[in-house]
Length: 131
Ligand SMILES: [Zn+2]
Image 1: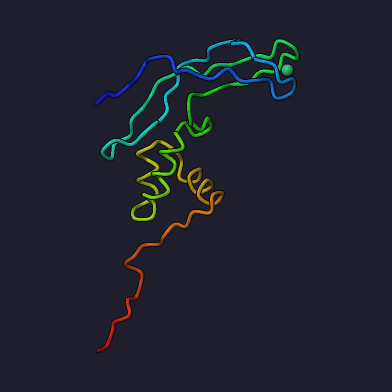
Image 2: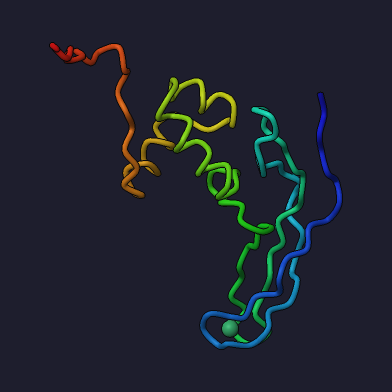
């Protein structure tokens, strides 16, 4: 099932972090796709072209991705939070496969955000209440 969205994403024109002036569109980078949402357990992709902006004063460049897409891992904040929740109850490797990121990458984000990953439940020894 395909669920692509080829529309150009609206990106906000950034201000130069050095000069504070509005940056200009410099170039559109090749189309890429990212997981923007999880719908009924399936990843929903968007296709877009990241935009490289340039400062007219100091010529600094900056690449902007739409909305809350995390550039390095090409998933949205929302999907990352979904993954944090999913790994609490099922295999981390499977979750990563679904959203197309490396398990080590997800673990790095998990550690950085201080999310706790639960170990498998059947390793617990349950205490029985004696009545
Ligand atoms: Zn500048």
